[in-house]
Each structure stands twice: as structure tokens, then as C-alpha cells.
Image (cartoon, rainbow, N blue to C red):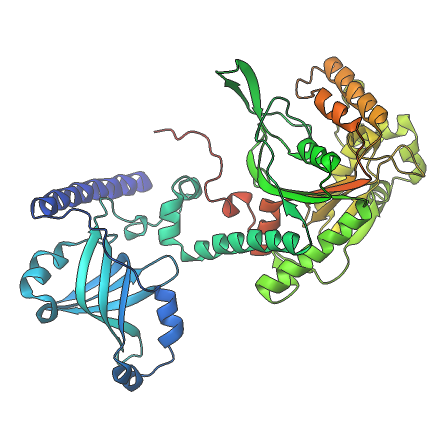
Length: 505
């Protein structure tokens, strides 16, 4: 009951303040305020701090440096005819000192003192240090650029609600400066990946996001409708088949770094709209792709963090070392000591193991599908150190080439770090008849299981008839990789505006 009363109290205070602030803006407009936009910001607060924080009082006096900055007023202390306030931009904050006699009594009393926390201001002044050694600006020119009509959340009780943090990310950024460094790192990581690929002679390409058939993965698509051509269309679930058509067309080293969309669950590991990089190399195999990933991760950690030692949650990773490698069956044996290899070659024993760990076996499920479910249920989350899992069953790898020795598995890998699937790659299936048969088998099984997410891509089969060179392909989940590299536990914390349920207003 007390908490409810407190919430009502906060709500009443905020509503009253919004009315006061709105009235102030109306009065400002009456006296000529027109949302000025001619101020030119010359530097950032962080640049000022880095450049001058080591100067002492006398050095700054001798330099007599004028700076021109802008940002939000986040704190203020009025002491009669002088005031201190804090100005904050996206990277830092600095103390501003203002005296009534410096900017005029009329401006100080009738304008500055009526401004509010959250207002956006421009400041021009001289750098100095206080007696306590705090770098500050002695302001001689001050202007309000925009009025904040709502109080910042931390003025009363902070922005503690997790969903509000995601839904109103702008408030989260204002009140949590550490968040900016996460998204700055995200931008730098993506740029480093792109630069690495280009420096290794890959060509960046773009393929359709709006597709007639959602191919390249087994996932529920988002569906839309094109009014002009009167047909149903789909947001892509993967760019894979288009990229392989480009390899058929003669490209040899290509990548695409862009968004995919899957109409599926939302969790700390999944967002329906996500960023992925896919890459393809002609005249290569899946071993080459595993080496590429190791080199990529080593390169970007050295470049951005000056070390290959990365801390994520309670784990420590060394990206300078080769990653572990295990076949899917060996991984199951490693983490399930009661299972022996021969069990995974016996249909009845495979089903018995699956049922014993709570797996519901779908009708018409084949051995390879059940083995994969056993792996996902008992192994995935235990793969903490970077590990390539290889030899995925053919039944769950419809686009991957069969292994030369064991035709029941494919030349495919998935990379796991901290229990997350980070990447998926394989030697591409370029036998057109095998590919056609797998597509048809998928379609046949999907009809039996009433799965409407499987499509037969006739155009891709037609392209394969012209010959796909020996090729390897790779997909990296960029959002999950950024989670690892920035030590964020939820995927929502590395996506500026994650998918949320509609607000119940």
C-alpha cells in the first residue's frame, strides 16, 4: 500500500511539473523563443576532459582557453548571484560556473533561473579549475536551445524498470552513460568486421530483404503483401540462397552484413529482427571458414580492446588460441557419461534417450533430428569456451555437403561460446540432384507435420543447374557476438530498440 501511495505521489509531482514546464515554454515563445538552430558545437565534453584534465589552475589561467559546447543541464546549484550547473552530452559531463554580473542581471533572474533540469543549452566560456581541482567552464555566453517538457526520470526515482529502459531507450541513454559505451563498441565492432572482410578481399553485396520465397533457413517468416503486383511477400529469414546465386554468377569472395527477420520467440538470446553477417568463398571448404572465424575474432579483439583476453559474465576467453573442436556425437558423449557411441547408431536407443530427458519426438522424425535435439537439450549450454561442433546430421542440414567418409553427416559446423550459438557454416551442397531431393523431402515431411514454413525454391534449383563451384559459407550472429565482446547478458542490451510487446497504455 505504501509503495502504491509513493507511486501516486511521484505521479502527482511529475504531472504538476509538466504543467509548469509547458507554461514556461508558452511564455518563452511569447518573448521570442523560436528553437534556435544556429549554434555550432566545436568540441565534446570528453575531448575537453581528456585534453585539459591534467592541467593545473595556473596552467589553465595562462592558456585562457575558450570552449564552445552544448548538452543537457542535469544538475544545478544556485548560490545567490552565482550558480553551478552540470552540462552533459553523450560522452561526458562538465561543471559550468555562471555569475549574474557576467551575463546580465535580467538574463540571470528572468531566464536562467527559470530553466529546468533536462533543458538543452549551449555554453561558451573559459576553462578553469576550482580550488578542489574540478575542471570547469566560466560561462560568458549562454542560450537555451530546447525546453524539456518532462522531468528526467532520475530526478525522483530513477529509471529502474527494465522494460521502460528498452521502450524509452532515449531516457536510458540520458540517465546511464555506461550504455553509450556499449553501443559505441557495437558500432566499432561492426566496422571492424566489415574492414576485416574488405582487407581480406571480400566484396560487400546487398541482396533482397523482401522475398517471394523465404529460403536459406527453417524459420517462421513475417508475411506482407505487395499491392501493385498482387502477391504475398516475405521479409527474409536469411540471404543465403541469393548469395550463392552470386557465387554461381562468378563472384568468389562476398559477404553481406545486414538484418534478418524471423517471426519467432523473444528472449534474452533472441530478437525477431537481428543482424547477421553471411560470407561465401568459392573454391574453399568448411575448414577454411573455421580458420576465417578464428582470425576474425582474434583481429577484432586485438584492434578494439588491445587484448585477446575477453571477460564475459563469469567466464574468461582467449581469442588468440585455436577454438576447441568436437563432433556432435562426441559432444553428446562428453556431457552424457551414461550414453555410449553405439547408442547413437540405434534408432530405438536414440528415441529412448530422448524420451528420458523430456524430448517430445515428432511424428516422422528421423534419427539425425532426434540426435540433434539430444545435443541441444544436454550439451549446447555447457559449451562455454569457444567450440566448433562438426558433423551435423544430413536431416538438419539441407543445404550442406555430405561428408566424404560418413554420408549421414555433413561438412558443417556451429560455433558456440558461453552456451550461445554464435556462428553456423558449412561446405555448400552443389550437387543439384541431391539438393532437389532434400528440398522435396523437406516439403513431403512438412506436409505430414503440418509445418507451413518450408518452401521449395525452384529458382535456386534452376541456378544450381549452371554449376556452383566448391564453396564454403558462413553466418555469424552479430548481436550475440557483441553480447560476448561487451559483456552484456541479454541481447536486448546490445540492440538500441529491441522488439517489445505493445505498451499497455
